[in-house]
Length: 114
Image 1 (cartoon, rainbow, N blue to C red):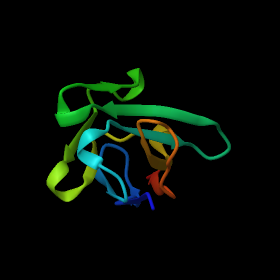
Image 2 (cartoon, rainbow, N blue to C red):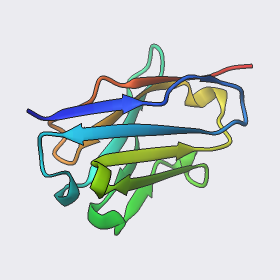
Image 3 (cartoon, rainbow, N blue to C red):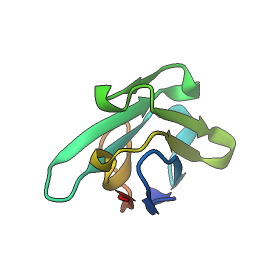
Image 4 (tube, one colour):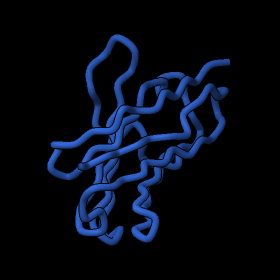
């Protein structure tokens, strides 16, 4: 069955960097685009980033553009989200999601606080 397992979330200070990982299994990872979505405490879901097959294209929400970079390693069935210059507003649970939006991981919590 399809599984998505996020990791890498933790408490960081404003301005620091962090890399999230999402290990995928149970489907043809290399032939599908992937999304990152986040949910801040008490708020709704917010799309963050998208990466196409073979890293051909990637897109970002405006608030993270220039600070976050999405990448993938198809040999490892893993998609990454490199986050830099973290801000308190980036505090959220981050989820990786398949292109079809049918499958979601359990999320990893990122807390940005001094």
